[in-house]
Amino acid sequence: MRPIVLITFFFFSYSNFVFANDVCHCQGYDGVGGPCYAGVGGPAYDGVGGPAYAGVGGPCYAGVGGSEYSGVGGPEYNGVGGPKYDGVGGPAYDGVGGPAYAGVGGPCYAGVGGPCYAGVGGGDQCPSVCSNPDTSDNSEQQSN
Image 1 (cartoon, rainbow, N blue to C red):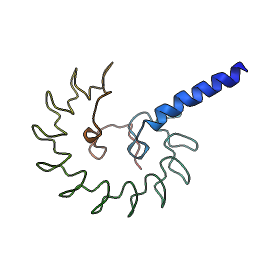
Image 2: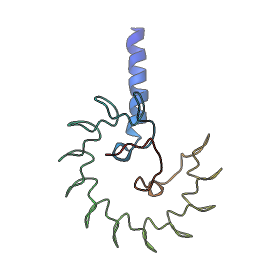
Image 3: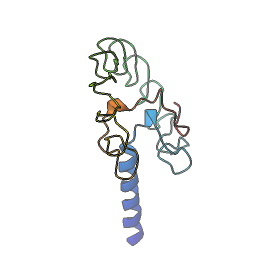
């Protein structure tokens, strides 16, 4: 009975971590056991049926109607009026006072005490607009 409880505990502990991760733009360790491991059965596996599958109907599909579609009206559209527009007044504007401002006191500030601080005790309050995988310099980032 004890091994079943232990296995169940680890499964749910690990699965909560995986579901909290953006597998389509995974950032982090991509080796075996890591949150971005893309091998068969891994949390970022991008083969048919995998959590990061980019084919038609997959969660990372970039074609019309997909969650990664960047054309007009798509969830990744960065033109005027789009959800990723980073011009003045846009939802991804990173200038002073903007929703993606990364300077001291801004919602995307990554320094000590900031909402996007990656050190001990930080990073919990970083808004999703702050993450931009297209410009990330993280060498461990998975590329889908």
